[in-house]
Structures are given as structure tokens and as C-alpha cells.
Image (cartoon, rainbow, N blue to C red; front, side, top):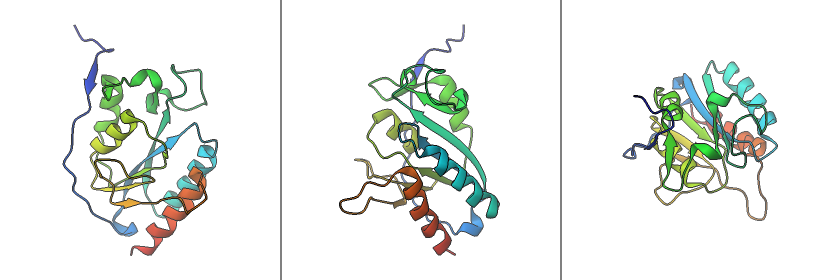
Length: 171
């Protein structure tokens, strides 16, 4: 019998960093935090940028403040990680892992700027060597980290604007 509600550990990946020029990036996975209300505007701008550079994108939403699907912002439930999908041991439901880890994108961007052990584990385990993030975690696994400037806290849209400048600069 298949237990769909069984929680399994997220596979660990060895770090292997690289920075790719925008011309070599064909697929990307982007993590957005629905707690930050700028996620919709950031998503719109990311889609426009990726369309311009012919990059196919998948979006995953971190909604740890909403425990069950259907209670939070309107996002695709299959691509949203809710509070119920995580436990304290960094374990994620099997169906969420299967949706995410069946992909091998050229690049992963995490615009999530708050600590959550499950989120960290998911991003760390993704199959991509080019990862861009907003915060350094204890087991450093990002190729590029965009930190907030001194005395200012970027929202996801502002962080994306900075990341897009870096992406355009790498030829």
C-alpha cells in the first residue's frame, strides 16, 4: 500500500558551484515567499525577463504561514509548500518531493529571505549547480548570494531587480 502522507527525508547533495552566462540558461526554478506581498510583482517581472531570454521557468511558493492548502494566497497547490508539508526534522511529503526533484533546471533562484529549515533543505537538495539566493545558510550551497544593503530590507521584487542585473552582466 502506498502511503501518500508519509514524510521522507530530503536527499542531501554535495555542493558543486558554477555561474552560467545567461545565454546558456534554458530552464530555471524560482522559489517565492508568499509572506512577502511583493511576490506577485516579482513573479511578473521574472516571467518577462525569462521570456526575453527564452528561459523556461517553474515557480514554487513557500507558504509556511498557511498550514493547509486553500487558506492562503492563490497559488498552484502542487507547486506550493505549505506548513503542513514540513516537519521539524526537515522532512517533506513524498508528493512534493516527486514534483520538485524530477526536474534538473540550469538555475535555481530563491527569493526567500527568512530562515526555515525545510525551505533550506528543499533548495539545497535541488538538482542544479547554479543557485542564487538571498541569505547564507550554515551549509553554504549558493553560487551567488544577494544580500540586503546595510540598513535596508529588500522585498522580493527589489531583490529580483538586483539579481537580474547580475544575470545580464555575466555574458
